[in-house]
Image: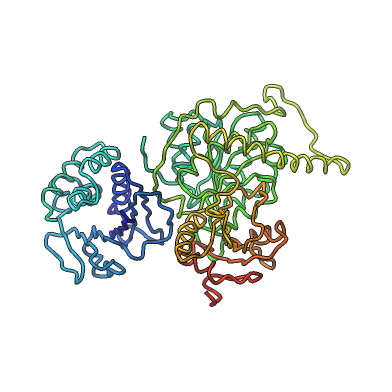
Length: 177
Length: 370
């Protein structure tokens, strides 16, 4: 496999950085190499932020930002009002949006899953915000980016609350890849 | 066990295993995660250390000095302005021959206010008598922190060691981390000139003109002796744990016509540039300098040399380029890049090599010939 590069769009405080960490950890559990890094700017709660994940079969030596991702994950669809989330996305690249309905992107393959709805149903809410970073792993497993076992293992290593695993399972089931 | 860790947490993990008796620190971005994590280890009892939350970096180093002179192991971490604020005390730690270990998360100096990676902070400490090492991966940050204690505390060294990691690009990146059981890799600390707080005594600190230079020479003698201590420590580490480092990390240098020299994460990214250039038929190599002090003898004979400086000495030049020119007695292509976190990609690095003009200096993003 050649290097697979993923960009995650979210808002500060929504867990985009943790999602990147969980995704990289899952890839490592799958026997691959992975790095995750947030882009640190002058971000604050609620502001649009990006984080990056690289996955490869060999150690990753690149530290500069991802400019041509293979995949884009949008944890908060409202950032699409202010940011072109598919900027630089490779032709035929994948977009995963947290949404109740399908959103088309010309030239790219689009998937959606209602992560917010799943989090609310599982009562995964911290400080009034639904937790999106654990359910999104279920969707990524469905898309074949990581294995289901590694996704669950990574979630359990970071969170003791089993509702996180249940939410990931729900996303896996509900998502139409 | 397979873990994922940031560079900062990898340093804290190593410190936990080495068990310093005293950690004195003051938080500063992007280093804060190191001392936060150590404070947590101390509060949960995972690390039995005296954690002193001081009111400034000057005091952090002073507290480490005070503790170290009693013969115990000490650690602190800082960055940028914090390091500069310590400057008087960093000189003192080296002069008093105290094996303090410090992680410095490299960050630019203001103004303008900037929190991103640059090496000028640590470079301004290069004449203090501290050993300095620059790392490029989370694993290397962990491994090197472990080794730093053994090197600093070795009876042939007894000098402080600074482990440098790039702000954000390494301090905050998450990469795989393989932790080890250190066993007896790091022997108990023994400081021959330790003072005993139970037997208070007064010492005259004045050293006259007929003595002072001897103490200065003694620092240099130990700095030279540290070369073989570093080699022995890295060899033993490789034998026990299977990871080998060295004074430089050389990538495809042997048959290279042109070698690019750099430090930190740019040195890793440079290897990707070398792979690109090799595919184009350019015989290029990368030499990532790990140890800045003691400055190693570099093997660059007969090659074009391109140097990336993530630092600058105004009115003189890139600090690494200046050192390499002097040592190699030959000119180099001096590239100033990555200041204040400036984005530098492997494609940019490949361009530095392709368009090199030996004898010239090039400020990436300022001049226009790349």
